[in-house]
Length: 402
Image 1 (cartoon, rainbow, N blue to C red):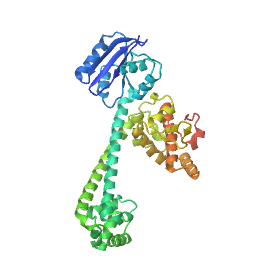
Image 2: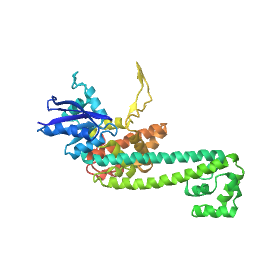
Image 3: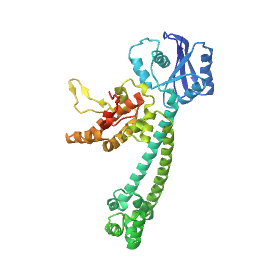
Image 4: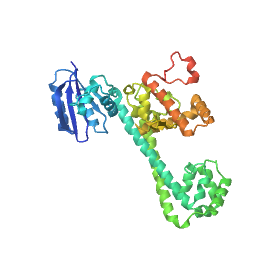
């Protein structure tokens, strides 16, 4: 007879109990601290049991990680559930007993009836990917914030500067801003010297015409001159921050790529629009696809399912994303959808068709996100590469995206 231990994870303390195959308590609920002594306290009753024991706990914040590591190291098979899974089971009405108010019971009982948690064979890798991908997102946000702050400064002291380059942060522009910020500084440059700097920085792309345009624009600028000192300090510091963050981002991308390469059955990057970094985010946020019985469950977890407002007999016609679930997963899907709209023939045609029908850009992109998630679900579920539809006639067993 197999026994089932459920552990309700908390910040300082955890609660555990053990039930048998009939849902009856074998070890009554007890509380133990989230420290070394507490973990020994939970291992003690496990060692006294002669029957095999399966352990389950919820992935609550990061407080479950140490407990998971210690129990796994002790040789126990630990199932990790999303709290939403257990909560949905608890509300299902399958087991309605007033005395079963302890969350640990529901965790154990969900495991007993065959609830599927994360695949622990790859869980450690997925957790590392999630940590690194989320950290990468924070670095990317910091870079974006620093760029916006530079633009705000330039908008005060040299508002016309942004019209001179397609992107203020191309290499040529950065080198110029490292030497001068105010229009008066650019206007005072020797024209030939400015031409040489532009030519060198742009590797020959810009020359005399760009130098003349830059100086003419600088001389006609309406920038606020008395902010000069503050502007120089801010732009200089922010440019250094961006350079540092971009170096860190490159190192992080290399680490993520190495980690993704350790997963032999990783085929997400065969989907147009899904880069290695995006695949890392998807794997880290989704974890084991076995947790999701249907595509609709994964769509809801990503928060891209429609949220329809209804009151009485009135039901809104416009449906928006519910935006529940993982924001990191939604962000990765949007990034992938943006790339797929350009590189995937089918999705490029779909986007053009829906836009021609008058659909808003955001609405169509949301639909593309869902189409991409269907592909991601099929690839993870079947463990096979994605085949671009225009070439699927040569594939004997096309993936099922239903």
